[in-house]
Length: 378
Image (cartoon, rainbow, N blue to C red; front, side, top):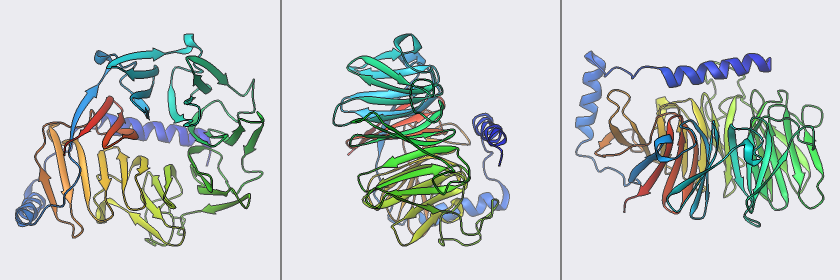
């Protein structure tokens, strides 16, 4: 598929999601069934799920821009990659880094922390930048081996920085300074629009638009590929038989479990079996998923175009401004499919979620209209 076409499609989908009017309240027979279901579950025991008090940051708070692509927790410091600069939240104050400070581009799409050195890596629309001790060094196609200047994802593992770009993937060896390029010539990827990366000492995973998931085995130095087994772009024919869709947007590898987000549902892979999630048979608020962040082998968070979702291995919780009223909303869905509303007074800044990170029991959420801090309520 032509990458320009895909870019236009992505933009159209994003604008549709951002600009769509609130969904009308259920009415008629469908509404009656919905209310009856809620009434039937009112007496059922609601699973214990995380509760948060959300505080939201916008430009009025000092955030560089309300459109936040990514968020990174760095101890007590919070980094926010926005459409108009990189924000640093420290001691309750915001500081902004821009191209005037050496940042590769004003639009910061992805962030990663080198825990060994404390360096922060920022993937932008114009290159890869490293923020180290207040100094910013930038890598581009012109001055390095970066495969493309549009950097959708970055992940640091040991002395290696793994990068996902609009024209293939690459790796920077920080010890030698050597770059390695990965594309259709030396990996199983067909399309080279690489959306995300999750690197560990054993496995490295890339989310490739139109090519599913690529797996690199660090010990064997070999590649493998996971695709949608039915090859169907409009529907899921064989549920739990493999990756749910070829158009992967994000992935997270934790405790030997791979969590994968797509625009058509989500997947969990334990190395042998796949389990897929769709709105029709799970607590996902939407199949259109921008980001997934695994907590452990059983728990994960999903950022969709219709809210933030949490899965504990059996039950689901959704946090968002109501699609009908815009008021704060939380719902819990148990393993039997019973949905129960939970009274809350706050919600994430917007339903369109693009980034997630954890700070202890708290959660930080990057949205299309602000950055949200979910303060855990015991």
